[in-house]
Image: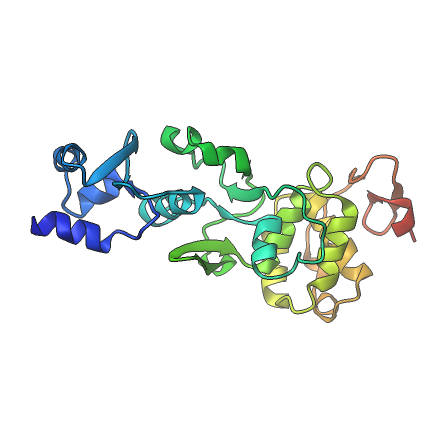
Amino acid sequence: MKKINRLVSEWIKGTVGLSGYLAENGFSKDLLRKYVQSGWLESLGYGAYKLSGDNVEWQGAVYALQKQKNSSIHPGGKTALALKGYSHFLPQKTQVIDLFKNPKDHLPRWFKSRQWMSNLRIISTGMINYTDTNLFTEVKFENIPLKVSVPELAILEMLYLVPEYYTFEEANLIMESLTTLRTDLVQKLLAGCNSIRVKRLFLFLAEKNGHDWFKELNVKNLHLGVGKRLVVKNGILNNKYNITVPKEYAE
């Protein structure tokens, strides 16, 4: 009885428990099965459990993948910027949560089969190496702590989704508000970013908005590739960064 009491007392309400992690902490699959039969736990699918009667949403599922499986999945892009107060002035449509991850991090079936998937946009990208812990900050959703992209990373992630999911104008409004980005982290992220289009778009918008941190960047040391990059259809080519931009943003 002491064991189940410890499990229940240490379990963060609203989160998922993964069998591999629980086994490492002394709770075998057979024991977990007994707890399900006794009504202490409920199965969410293969290898995943929740406290009986508990309500689990995507935050509790992402928490489990981050903390118990060391997954790279995290709220990023516009979602992370909104959590930091950078998108309150943008028109809010039906709120979609942007979750970014490394392509090698495959989501388990129990995660993909839940109703919360209808509200999530899962973006698998190798644009950034997500192993650097400095790229994340902790945000609490009620009592659930999650790793979320810092603004320097989040804006690159948002630009990755322009123009498919976000407009050029939205991206510019966000960039306009990013007056306090850390130059050293921006430099590091741009140096490691694998998307030439995103890097050029970032530099174009940063320069356009005249941020002080932009003036401290060493742009000459960045690999910006060759050739043109299409950002918006029927746009005007910006000769400095070799990307197409809306006519109203042309030089």
